[in-house]
Length: 364
Image 1 (cartoon, rainbow, N blue to C red):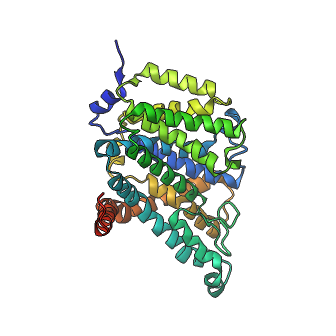
Image 2 (cartoon, rainbow, N blue to C red; image 1 turned 45 degrees about the vertical axis):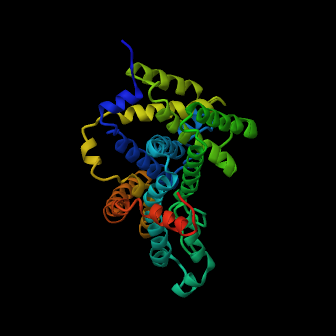
Image 3 (cartoon, rainbow, N blue to C red; image 1 turned 90 degrees about the vertical axis):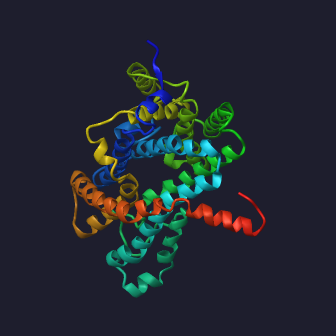
C-alpha cells in the first residue's frame, strides 16, 4: 500500500496540526530545563546530547531548532497563497513584537529595580539600564546593573538571542517570495542546499555551535527554518507513515556526530516534528485553547532570575519545576492579555505600511 503524502495527512486533520501545540510546549519546557541545569552542571559541556552528537547540538539548541523548523513550515502557506509580503511581515510583527516589547520594558523598569544591589538613583543613572531597551529591536544588550541572573552572570534573559535570527529567516523567506522562489520550489531547494554547503565550506569541522559567528548561527538555524519551508512546498511528494518516520529517526541517529549532520539533521528533524504534528494527543484540545509556548520561552529566564534572587536554590530539578510552573502562569497571562489581543490586529502594521506607501505614490 502506497504511503499517503504529507499534504494528504494534513488535509485529514483539517490542515491544522493538532500535535504542534504539544511540540511547542515540550520545546519551550526543554529550554527552561536547559537553563535550570546551570545550577549544578555546565548545560552544554555536560549535556549527553552534546557528547552524543559530537558537539553538533544540545538540549537547548535542539529545542530552538524545533521552533525554527515549525516556524518555516507554518508561516510558508500564508505567503504562498497570495504572495503578499507586507501582510506576511505584518502578521509576524504582531506575533513577535508586542510581547517582546512588554517583557523587555518590564524587565528593565520593574524587575531590575526590584533586584538590583544598587540604589535606584544609581540603577537608573547607569547607561546599561537604558541600553537594555535595545532588546526590543532584537539587538542584544543583556546586562542590567547590579542584577545577577539565575546563571550567576549579569546577563538577564539570554533566550532573547534567537529572535534576531528568526526575523532574519522571515526576511529571507520574504525575499524568496519576491524573487519567485516559492512558486519555483526547486529553486528554493537550491537556495537552501547552497546555504548548507556554504556553512560546511566556510566553517569546516564540528565545533561547539555557540563559538561560531553570527553568519554561522544564521545558516545553522536557516537550515531548520528552510527545511520546514521545503516540507510544506514538497508536501505533495513527501510520504508519511510509521515506517518512514522510523527510517528518518534511524538516519538521524546515524548522521549525528559527523559533518553530514549539518545537512541531513535539519530535514530529518523537521520531518519527524511535522509528522508528530499530524498526531492528535488526548490533551491536544486543551492545549489548543492557548498557545503558551512563546510566552513561556520569552519570560522563563526572567522568572528563573527572580526565583534565584529570592531563594537560594541548589537543586536544578527544584528550580526547573518551580520555574516552569510560575512561567506557565505568566505565559497564560501574556497569552490572554497581550498575545491573543495583538493577533486580533495582525493586519494593522500592514495597513499602516500600505497607507504610508500610497502617500508617496507607491503601491503595495
